[in-house]
Amino acid sequence: MNERIAESELILNSRGAVYHLDVRPEELAGTIITVGDPDRVPEVSKHFNRLESVHQHREFVTHTGYIGQKRITVVSTGIGTDNIDIVLNELDALANIDFTTRTIKPALTSLKIIRLGTSGALQEQVPVDSFVVSSHGLGLDNLMPWYLFENTPEEKALLSAFREQVLLRPGTASPSIFSAAKTLADKFTTGFHTGITVTCPGFYAPQGRALRGPLSHPQLLEQLTAFRHEPHYISNFEMETSGIYGLGRVLGHDCLSISAIVANRVRQEFSKDGAKAVDNLIKTSLEIIEKL
Ligand code: R1P
Ligand code: URA
Image 1 (cartoon, rainbow, N blue to C red):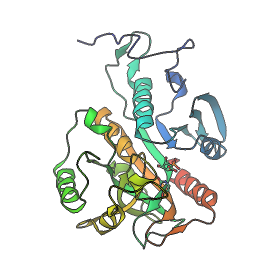
Image 2 (image 1 turned 180 degrees about the vertical axis):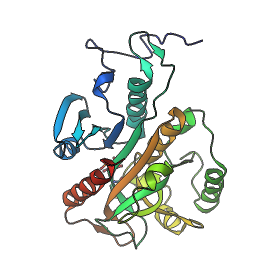
Image 3 (image 1 turned 135 degrees about the vertical axis):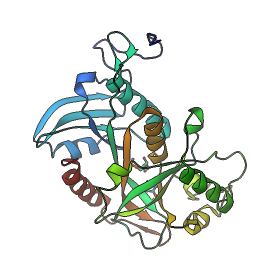
């Protein structure tokens, strides 16, 4: 039975828009770009030849418009997979729940969701200002254990290799892994590195950065860099990819995460112009996204 979803579960505001994003179903495109930084949204939508709608609530800025014939929504998620839980569920609700009857639509829509973010590289040969397509999102955060999902045999093998090679302190993380949508990943090959992206629940200790707080896992960087499960290796880490891939799996959407590398942790380098690297990633990716 398709039950009515209560007001407390799917929260709509006075203009009939979904609670956190403040977006109505007709204001969402089928192809969605997510960015972490709210100020990056206009950096994407400045390439639109027509801007249809603009909304903002908290850190969630949403612009919908056209590049050529392609209708695209760009939305900021802020930082972290706790925000991804909100954004992915609300995007899915906009596409797949009838807001009038509050029931799940009989025919479901699969969205294309592409993250254009920044990231730190874990391999010497992945330099600052290069681009990485995440073949997998490997989460050290704690979002996906709250959902029921199935892993593929390849994902299970990668996870067990990870558990053997990266020795996490008990209680710090319950790792999960999800692969990218192959149909999308196949379009982003020339000019992009590809590797496993580790998603961390923080920027400092969870990414091996010690400023003043001592680390419980000082070997983290070394172990992530050394990880191998042929032909797979860990290329980079950031803070959203595993949540996007995991909820994409749970909700039936095609997801891809692409990062501009702003830090290389092996070479201990930071980009001299991270904004330019992100701008290059946006331009390069939009040329491909327009044709999806
Ligand atoms: C940390 O500085 C933030 O940058 C990266 C991380 O995933 C985290 O969100 O991505 P964005 O630049 O897309 O926010
Ligand atoms: N974003 C991250 O999460 N880590 C980095 O090192 C750079 C960007």
